[in-house]
Amino acid sequence: MGVYIIAEAGVNHNGSFDLACRLVDAAKTAGADCIKFQTFRARNLVSRNAGKADYQKDTTGDGSQADMLTKLELSYDAFSRLKQYCEEVGITFLSTPFDLESAAFLDELGVPFWKIPSGEVTNLPYLEALAKTGRPVVMSTGMCEMKEIEAALRVLRENGTADIRLLHCNTEYPTPFVDVNLRAMETMRRAFGVEVGYSDHTKGIEVPIAAAALGATIIEKHFTLDRNMEGPDHKASLEPEELAAMVSAIRNIEQALGSGEKTVSPSERKNIAVARKSIVAKRAIKAGERLTEENLTVKRPGSGVSPMRWRDVLGTAAIRDFEEDEMIEV
Image (tube, rainbow, N blue to C red):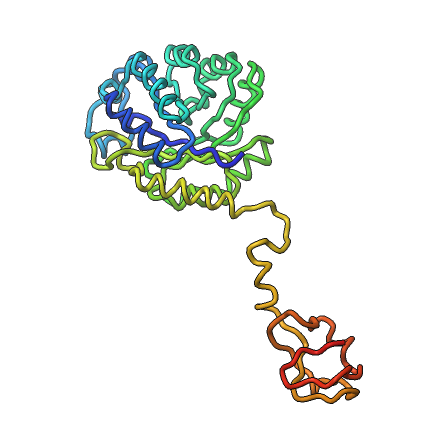
């Protein structure tokens, strides 16, 4: 299986079912494997007095998280219709639950796996509830120390989850390049013995492409229809054309990684004779004349005697007359 690409629509539908459907269409056109939303009831997710993150203040102004998130809710019925629409379009529907009520709804709806967000890695009741469903888990690890990831994995495994994958992640929107630390993917792979991927919040598409080249099996990236729309995540998201470019580049990287076996590829085999060299006559040589460094040289093409046999050829007698630049026969 190649890299699994999750187009993260998140809350970029701005609470509109129609806009959510347009995001589904854009993700399908871009070639993503899956489109992911976020399911929550704001009253269950955040207390009334919880403040916003700095990036949320920058994009949506002052006010409480509760007010902001309430405007970004979709009804459970809307999610049911979204899943049906995804099936009609031909793209996998996924949504991350942010509270236990929403998790129960999505379990009944039938999501293919759980995508645990970074903020829930330390939420014991949440981890236990999701694990007990037995569904596979993909867990983001932003803001996490290794010991916190280890603890979450223990909870998931002890409560029935066998299939777990981890996503390296940084939760700053947008993430500064200096804080990306892609090599942490390999650290987690070695430490925990699971497949790893990358959930990206940087600007542009370079970092997720690099993550794919480093062996990420899952790539998750936020996208929007228009970065200028109102909402907390639009500005750190790709627009549809950029999402398509990222998907295309990752698919190219998939092919370019290859099998790891070093051998002549089918496409380059025809170039061997053109690029390599053969032993040729440096000047005219008479039959029976001794072959030496004075009358031999090495030139293209490579369809004659290989220069790797240079020592074997030196000192032998010419089997016939050779003209200058003619390939030597032995």
